[in-house]
Length: 313
Image (cartoon, rainbow, N blue to C red):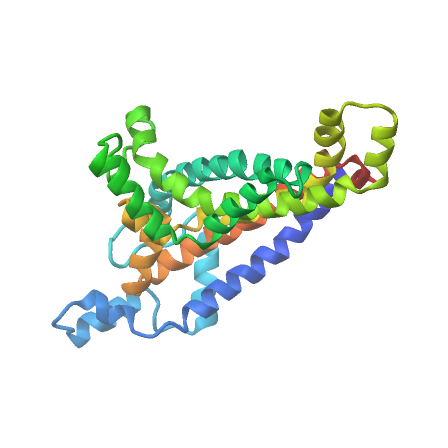
């Protein structure tokens, strides 16, 4: 296991370097001049030149990249040109919000999608299977913004059970925090649950027809033990991959859902930064998101080994 982790960590380093180069390079292709936005309406040439000097906008792109990556390695992601705050502080402020929402959404997705997929595979061609497939089709085809508005109308306007919008930090009041995030978490988790259900069902059907499952049944093991210990354990590999990727997607910010429920997460931060040509914020948020994806893939690889001992060799 140690050798496996070392090998994967060594692969991450050049990947992160390449990702940082792509992030910085593609950022330069965005139209517009951030100095013009910062200068305001007057756009005094002297002020423009001072801004360009301060943020090294006149330097060649390789020089700009060198100073940026030097700061990143020292923990400095730069400074927001619009908000006049460090990007690291903005990320530290917004990341817990999105992390909480993503964690709740993935719990909803796993709690619905995997059991539904198992039942659908075990009860193939029955009413349970048809019902699970209808749920999956509904979850995949339902737009998040429509479901979010519908839930606000039902649970906030009609029943007055939950707040329609806003966010309360978990450390301030955990009950109020859960109340403000349960609806957006379900909206996000609903679509992921549908995809997880389809992948779980497909993997389970393949595993249920394998020789080791037939052998386990021939030994007289209980069907529940055969399904949960033998079939499910070997069917979890594609589900783990999908779960890690979907969790990474959630962490990058669910823009529409955050806008509908007024959640101040990564989604709103990155959209505002793009519209305002706030290069440092865009680069910092995208770098954090890309790093998160890479780390989640590493954790998924570790989970493969833990779930399936045959991969340890």
